[in-house]
Length: 153
Image (cartoon, rainbow, N blue to C red):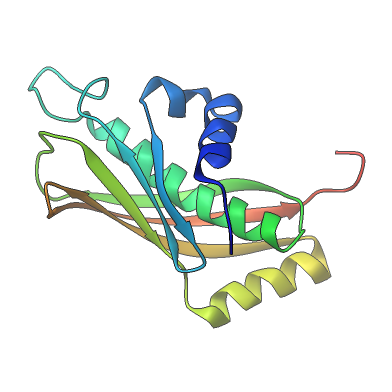
């Protein structure tokens, strides 16, 4: 899969303005996952660490980006929304941080594709690990819904 990181990053910044405001950058995209990165500033809080909402937002974006890119690669146009999530903040973040979204198990991904194709919508749960300076600093799990777009959407 040959994905242009710059194009995806530009898309995020244009379509999801928060990604630009918190300076999200795309580090890697593949069938096995997505890695996004964000610096301490502009995500700093009053304790000189990353604001928890920023960490959560980057994790949400990493998983959303994975689904978006994979469905585009398969030429399945969908509106992707997060349905619910859980975040664990393991350590304060004092530097640039990265959100690593791993691909779901193949059978779960295939179930999503089948549901979208058959019923026009499907769900998938994705896990993201957040790292800073080589340490695991947070964990995220989110359930996303993919709603197939009609030509007019």
